[in-house]
Length: 223
Length: 308
Image (cartoon, rainbow over all chains, first blue to last red; front, side, top):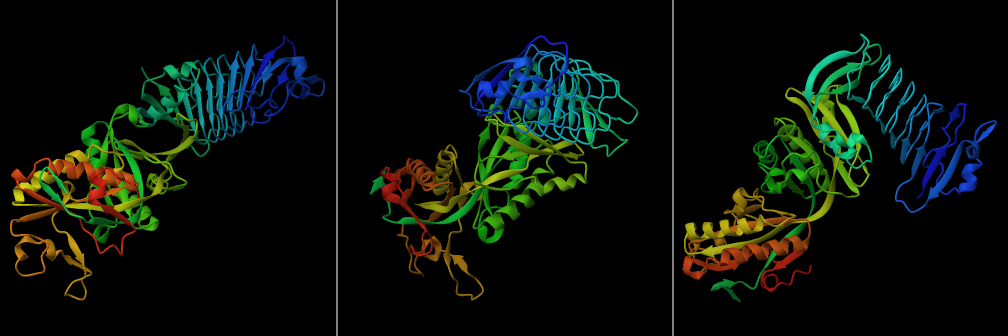
């Protein structure tokens, strides 16, 4: 399996990164990856420096020096691990099908939008509509979240280190000590992420979005 | 052959193919893990009347369990996969789901995965939550969180089912009931230190060994009169005049080697009390060798030969 590293070049335009997924790029050479079109008038080579390390066990992609202009990173990803050593734009991990996405910086709007499975971990802040229409999986944010958190969220877990501004369609289910967090945190410890430092099993549990089926949860970590 | 002055019969234990699974049970502390495990492995001495034979394999430290809490591992054995699946689900629902703070996890990997909490989740009445979380190897495991009155019941969706062996055994013959029981206790203490085996009878020891058939047509098993000390003069007895008590230790294990190693440890511990403490003979139960697929020959086992 290969670990593909994309180092962003300074650009003043938006870059759609949905084509750059760990599984889709397996077996491709640097030249083949560099020739991939990200838009009608933009190739990977124009937006990134690309390097490939083939000596790893699982498919992996790392983005470096990205900014809020790099949107749709991990969009529809189905397997592997994707790390972002920088910020990410809108739609980070949107429609995530499986695998792990770690963003060491902040993310734009609609992170985890319609996410169905897998894990999306944002170490910085998340923009508006975080976890909108999310169907399942786990989304974690260590920083702040913007407006309309969990809008239309159906199922899944949104784990927050800081209390969000929630709409009235989210209902407070009280503080709890949840045993499954032991297992979740144990899986975090295998990752190169600040999420590995979380240890509190005590969370404030909210359920919603009651505007829809209301089976999702927001867990706000308590000290 | 003698061990510490105790005669070792030139015979064998006859054992059968079974299906087995392992479940890891954790709780807030060991007291409640044992409460759950004892309930789950209760009334599980013999497949004849209980469906499964089960027992506690060992205690688990906090770093050995998936959720980092103290726990115990239990092994369950049945004659077929269908019965094992039925019994596991029933015992999960009545013994683990009901026990405060208890959680259950797969304790064995296999190509045959059977339901642990897969159907139990419906107890959540639509409020159950599925979580898929990668383990240390990156393999995704599915867990179910079921809301219950003490908080949440956490269970893994499936556990592995493997081929195993049940019915390894040996008999301890001695001059008094008290001495034989003491020898059996020593044997059980030694055998409980070993992995992959359980001794399903009360305290690991059975006093009512059986033979196939009965004078009563409806009974398919009855007391093993050849080893009943009070019938010595009346039936074709296997006992000499000095024997006043016989007890049996039955051991089920995941492999032939596991059972053989545990039988060796148990017999050596029982014999360590020696002839001077009233332990006279070690024998084994069999059906002439025609029913069971596995024969555990006492003398080769004690000589360290454990091949199937």
